[in-house]
Length: 88
Image 1: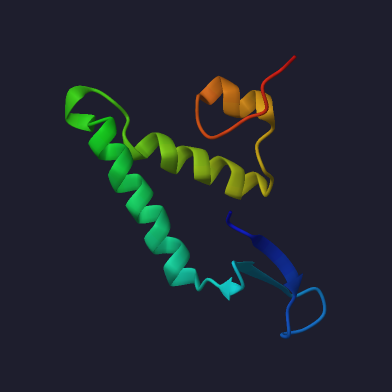
Image 2 (image 1 turned 30 degrees about the vertical axis):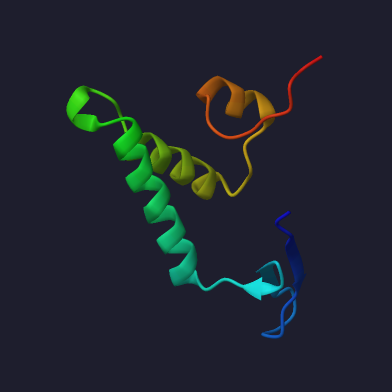
């Protein structure tokens, strides 16, 4: 199981450190993960065949980054992206 933790950072008041299984990911490592996911979306949903591919994932990320919030379950369900809690 992957353990994601948010701990107090050391750079000042309010600083937070995000770790995955005890390892602090760098911004470049996070970017690399996102680029791998986007490449995979282009392979699964090729834009040359009329699909959105990585654009859909990029739009998804940018929406919630701009709004500085996580999507709610209904939004994930509507987009058919990510995991959501089944209703009922």
